[in-house]
Length: 270
Length: 354
Image (cartoon, rainbow over all chains, first blue to last red):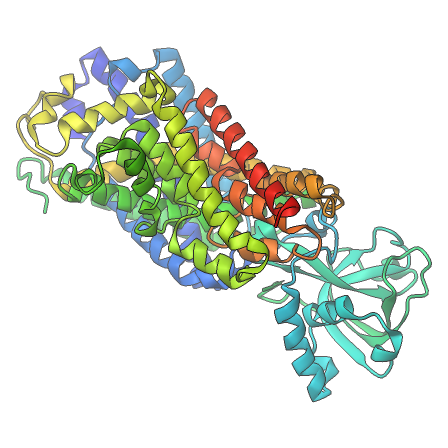
């Protein structure tokens, strides 16, 4: 800094200082925001709201390394090498605009990334992506499910495992003696929202942006009186032929109990 | 490491400032869940969640790309990389398209790396070749694609071959451009020229024009100082692009129904186009996109999947925002069109021939 201060009287230098701020601190600022958020999510065990667990270690290590560089860039504040030269230099008006734009972007990023509470995806995204249209690696999931079916302990099957079983067979006889006990968020069936909701989860392969909704249909006319969309519930019940004429699902769970539960700390499935 | 005795006074100030800001950011982050009742509408909330997930997913790769780019520019001797490459242009680009084998950064990390290569002596078309080839021709992508699909339907082979061909054909086309520097944004070609003069040999501090005066005259910045400087400059360019690109990707996700695309899956032509559109808006990393698309395996024809894996690895909304930091819009339109055409051709070939 001392260097800029001493040369401030020169107007071209002052121009360099504002350019320096615009062109450098926005990168450091945005990096600071994202590495702090990442490390905090990692420490508080919430990284899973955004990315697949296989990245936790790598992401955290790179965030710590990034943090070291961010702090180091406050230590070495040399405006030396590589400042844009006259050839590539925008006009003063554009530079002011860029400075303003950078400041705005940084402010928005800081508020949304650092001040807003972390959140899981909601049904608003699920409705944009057809339920059970993808997301399951069918072979792997159904072999897991088949192994669990073999134990006879059907209540341990998750939404994901039921969905992969249902994708293989919708023969009512196969499900006649089986009780499901599944946890997920409430997602109305688009075809018959009054009578059917899904107990739904998002499947994530990389990060939340590729999340695919999957769900088991539950037949409960008038469910809206007791539950809201996006509420987390645990549904226990047997599979029956779906009484709803409009729903596309052949089978649905006829709930014996529907209990509100807290959102799990790992809301997505993998 | 800070060899500058004369300016050591500023070191503690900067360090304190940096640490205080970091601590402040952590404090804000730790205290803010107390105000949980922000009550954002679902769609706004999901846009933020989706954008943030892309940023958190990509930022580490961007940092890794910048670090590798720093190694190339600051720590390796000048021309170290180019020394081992063939001189004949076609062979040279072919070798460059395999460099991703040694730099397995994700596609977003390839942008800073490609910028570093250009500063380090690659020509513009050579750098484009690297940028287009590396997302596919790297060990992580090949292994995950193999895990997902094995050798079934020729998807893996198509992906590898198409990635290689696309990168080399486009590299060759741009090598015939009369003025390759005009493919770059003005800011980048300017900053490209400067470190070449200032950096490595230390003689360049004056070469940077009026920057050189003052009491640091003749002082050569240490390698660590130059690495940090490079980190600052590269994040200044890449991070805003990453944030904006992720926001666009998130908005597309929230407002464009995906079911529209899925309805097209079983037609040999439409499945290819629909999967390319999906790849464009989903913007998933090339290292893992095979797992993602595997879940659509029952809905889409193999050719659609091959095009998804080829086109999506190279081009998507987020990548365009990142590449715009370096290349002009015109260049990007040309690259996108060429990659799209060749990926579609590869997909159609799989659907109709294989």
